[in-house]
Image (tube, rainbow, N blue to C red; front, side, top):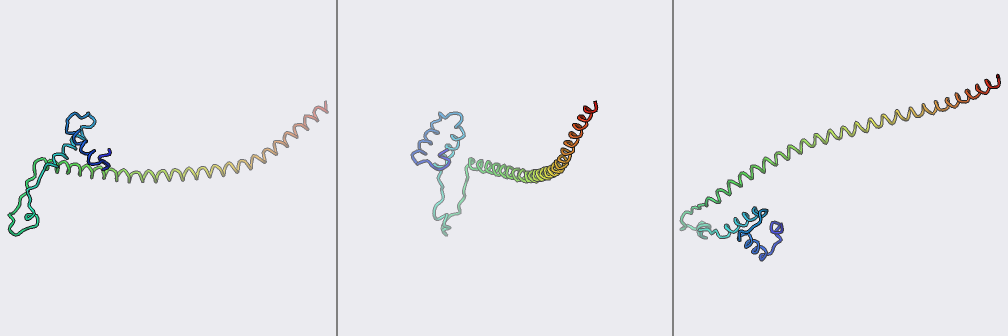
Length: 156
């Protein structure tokens, strides 16, 4: 979304705020409506702190900050989100480390395939050399058969 990427102008942001504040929002934009509602509420919030209190002026009265219940709820939700992020990160790390075992297994399988291929090529090479000798013997045997047939025909 253009707004989430920080590419909107101030006028576009005002138009978005007005649209979401109107209340007639399509169902698929309800989550964005909640976000714009939260932002609008936070814009209206003010602080009772004074400069003297912040700067630590000697005559300043001790200050207390009361957070509304809404902020406590936000902190609770943020804590749950952080816990889920830690769990998701742990799951990713565990999955990634399991992936390295699969990668190692794949490498071993590829190595075994290459070695088997090399051994079969060597056997094939040796058999082809033997077949050359058999082919010459077959020609010799064929020649003997022809000579034998010719002699048998001559004997008749």
